Length: 508
Image 1 (cartoon, rainbow, N blue to C red):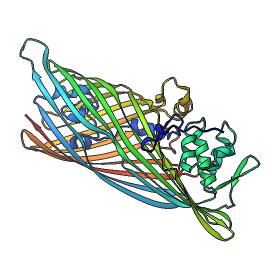
Image 2 (cartoon, one colour):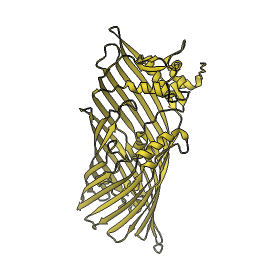
Image 3 (cartoon, one colour):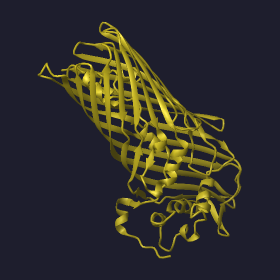
Image 4 (cartoon, rainbow, N blue to C red):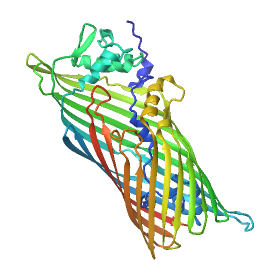
């Protein structure tokens, strides 16, 4: 087979290609917002759809800025602590990750009407930057299984090339051809990803070719596993807002949002073939995916004061249209026994693959809200949000993404989200509490359970300025597969996330 290499493709070690393997959880990770607002917003469970008067309330209902009577500025700092408990084949493990962040800051400017006879009382213009989601997630699992990670490589080798086995000439290097050269070449062919996985395993002597089929080099039925997966990064949003106050009774607003996504996911899998006497003994398989891109969305909303105390809110969050790109790298180390001698093989292409850009459309949502304000003593509020995750879509109209979109359509569902918040005021001190419940986007709650969040906080008013402190705990159980195929064993992760938030805000 003739191979033509274009040197320009290897500039800085990058190769741009089309084919890749998608992690179906990535789009959910990007499209599922967290509560990352001011301390007051977080402490009250984010139930601000009918309240307004807080920079973070614009996330829920853009009409909320029209409730400000004065120009306002706020900045927020958060300490996030995550503890993941893993159960894998009855073995328990734990991983902890912590991070300091500035998830929210913004300002609202109030322009009062000069004409007291017109119904338009004021116009507000807001600008905010907040974190939709912070991806700080570390998971560690270990245990003994009857299933081997090598099944992943065997599946790709035997069934990944047009439902058949990968040709032998695609896993063997030619004269003066390095592993990196071969890996680079396989990027350019159809079914190239499966051929790359087969090549790594073949070059690492994990698998052998027997009669146009691939088999494990050696035998075994008991395997010890360790898997560590680490994700870091963010989904941030820049929001421009405009809102209108009509007769201090009807408030209407709109947002235009720019989204910025940047996160890295790294995984390391260690496996030991405990019963091995010859052939494959150990492997370490490392994968790293860096995803980045941008997008846009918009919000529309309104708040109506039915009475001075009772408020009704409604808002629409449009779909988010994202353009993303992935950079991917991987390597494999193996330990092979032959005639009692151990040999280590390091199969490292030393290549970062730059995949072609692709589009993701995350679904929109509708929110209905109610609030009751007890004068200067306090308030209670309630929000309900409906979002259909089965409408999540990769590459609209592209046949390349049909299997991924069919997976989302069959596996995901519409979710209901409930947020309840309350505040009680004692002179300059405000006491707050909140609760949030979000249905799992998966029909099968074993894959991902419902999210529950509990929060509380305190604030102190200095007159024109205010200092708020909030605490939030949210919990969710998820299933974690240590590798994408070849194994049915999965770890059950119990995730506990603690957020401690401090906000300074001032009117001017």
